[in-house]
Length: 158
Image 1 (cartoon, rainbow, N blue to C red):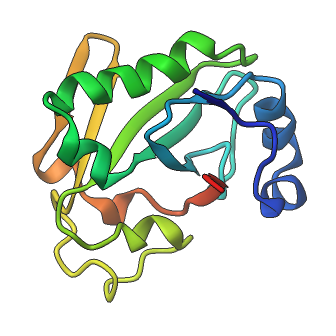
Image 2: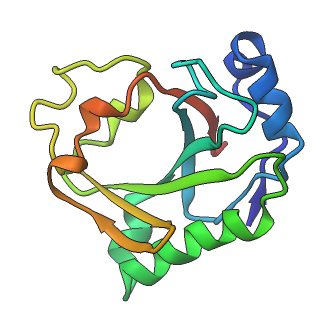
Image 3: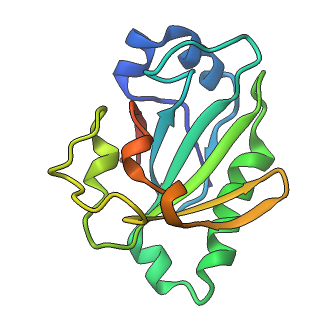
């Protein structure tokens, strides 16, 4: 497990309230997480209400998925690690993403959608969620990476 105490510089500069919330939330990630991105109203999209959740995507390294005898159990553990340690003033809406198209998930490293990075946007990446009665892989049209923007990388594994 890794407790995140240092965030990307842009977070504090551009979203000071979200930075303060995350700094006090005890954000902890599983050892297989290599990057965390911020989405939604507390991210670059803006417009958060006081009770808005924090939408975070935990990018799991491809090697961890490939080497795991049970990818679903690994992804559950990734989300459980962060959720169990979260002490934020608002709820965290977590997703675990992984590269299933051998594209390197370059789309998660840019703020705005770029069709050059992902010409086939539906199901191009693996997404796993545990949320209010849903526990599993997100597939089909609902898993369209072009709809996850704008986003901001807030942490990368050193």
